[in-house]
Length: 547
Image (cartoon, rainbow, N blue to C red; front, side, top):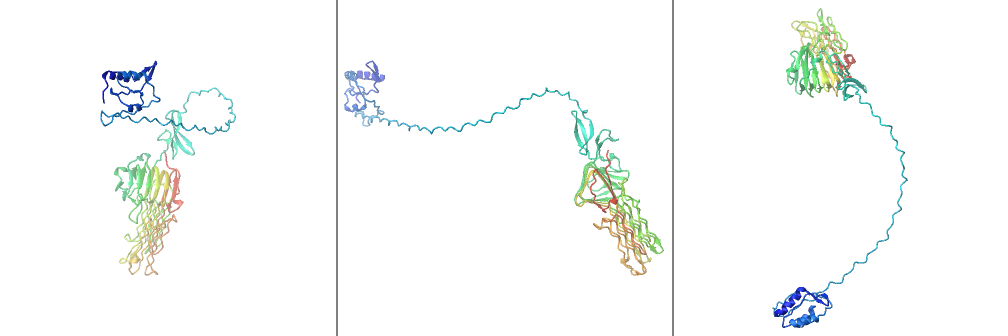
């Protein structure tokens, strides 16, 4: 491009910098100013949208300013773009600026449907003015609090037929405990308190607690030495007033286990907590050799006596049930004397049967009396298994062929004694207390021939003959029955009877059966007691001793 003369260039530059002209007293916006070289340009610049006059050298500029006429419409050009052909080529302007399409107005505003006035406003029912506010009487200040009792004091009270212990707390009587055995005072403690069970037959101080005993294996308690095998510690035992006393915090025999009690003394279990007999506890007399612990001579059957060559049978032992008399061969042995049901204080076992008549080595021995057990609990006492205190079987008479002699049979032992005491006693399922007596033995035959079958037979043990009565020994069949006879043993007491049967008569008579033992319960509420025999004649009951 040809550069304009310097003077012209300076003037045009100044005008371009101002970007406007003062014409006729008005500042006229002239827009961008298009410059041309000194040599001038022709028509192409006329379409740019600037003054028609050619802007050239200095003299021409002045004339152009004077002759300037405002264009009809200001058309702005696109950005300057030189031709690629080079600086000497003519300047090609960019196409004229295309204005934006005319503004299109938004569719006319649509007026919504006429405003719908809602239903008339429902005025609620007239406001109901409440009754005039009643001013309460002047507030009465209560009297200063006066306690009804001395803090910490105790007293006995009764609520819903249950005796209770109440204690003074913050000046008012408050329930402290229900008293299953009653509430009161005692020689031991003059302060009102819930009465506690006091065991029968020993001093209350013996209820001293001890280990928790749970028996899950066979255990034998020997009351003579007052010790036990297995899990029970020796320190839990002591001999007190002729009894073997086991002091524990709780006592349990597990299902399927039987604890055997042997020895000469009755057993007393004292527990400060609960007692549960799920298995069995047995204190029994066995046949003619093993006495039940605590056996007593008081109701023993009498021995049979001879009359000539004939021998009588021994009488059965008695306790609450009468034993059977011996059979009459010579002179029959009398049964022991039965006693009325009692609370078993003192505690004792059953009585033995009498011996049969005859040679010492041949006569049948009397069965042994059942044992004695006492369980005293300050907790709950629950029996699910069986407690046995049954009598032993009478022995059969024997014969000696060489000496040509035979003998009468022994009477059976009676059942023993069971004493249970606690605030609550429960029997569960098939639980029962078995105090049946044993069966008497049978006499032997005597004749010139010898047969083993002619020996007398022992009766059944008291715990045998399930759900029935223990049977006496069967009489043997003598060969010379027209000359010699033998008597059968009498049956012992059973589930259906408290008294035993007499022994059978014969040249050598049978022994009498053993009578039933005794059962005593001491509890706040006496449950139905499942005893064998099932007879009220063997049962005594009363509330427990409490202090």
